[in-house]
Image 1 (cartoon, rainbow, N blue to C red):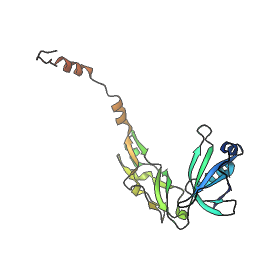
Image 2: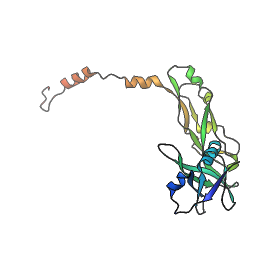
Image 3: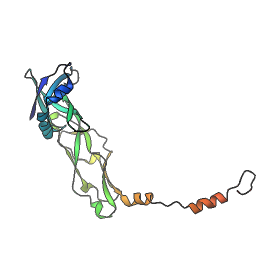
Image 4: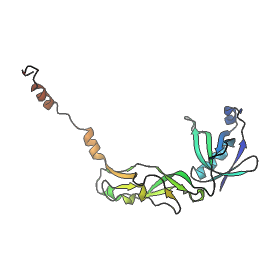
Length: 213
């Protein structure tokens, strides 16, 4: 299991000074507990997050030698450099179910694409909500595009194959992927307005006295 060291952080600590030292301000929290303010090393975190992402348990080792199982709940990034500025860790229990967003991984090819050259796959969702014990959380869920055999086919959330002991929270009727036709959209965009017909209608209008305009 992936591990990262966390050090206690005083509330009066200057955030910018910490970042200049290569540290990321972070918090650890869980339901019914006081939020704990800590710092983590930026390089260490980037390595850990690359492996664990937001769906795998990370063991956070604190100064008092306590070890907490946690998930990365949220990350704030610098809009320019995209460097992580702040991290939220959600502490979890091995025996309690949690709801987590799991990324979708699209695989295979849609047979419907062979039917018309203007057909395309539209990926509506890129993640779904599931409920599970922390140890059963998958890193991703596969979406097999072979489930799109014809035009206007849909893959619904309820059609996804989940690992054992993982329950879908997202509405099972929600569309995950579908087949759309691009040509129809182009035809609508290229619709020509018949100004001559509009002119005829204008000539046929009468004023309030019944005299043609």
